[in-house]
Length: 125
Image (cartoon, rainbow, N blue to C red; front, top):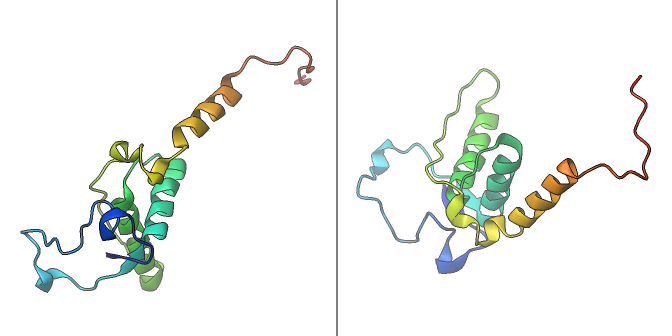
C-alpha cells in the first residue's frame, strides 16, 4: 500500500512519509503495492472506529482498504490479513477525527438524557 490522491501535510498521510524507507524493508518479500488515497484511508479509519470499535490512524485505515481489495480479488474461501500498527489517540486533534469528540458527547447525551416528562412513556404492556 502506498499513499496516492489527495495529500495531507508533508506530501502524504501521517504514518507514511515520502522517501522514508524502513530499515527492515525487503522489496523481494513484497507481492504487490496498492495505491490508497488519503480520503479512502481516512474514511476507513473512521469506519473502523464507528463500526468495529477499532481506534486506528490513517495508515492502518489504508492497510485495511488495501486488504479489502485483495480479499475481493481472491474471492470467497480465501483469508486476508493486515496489521493495524497505530492507534487513533494521536489523531484526535487532526482532520481524521475532527468533531468526533463533540459528536460522541452529543450522542451520549441523547442516549442517557433524562426522559422528557411532557412525552408520555410508551405502553410496554
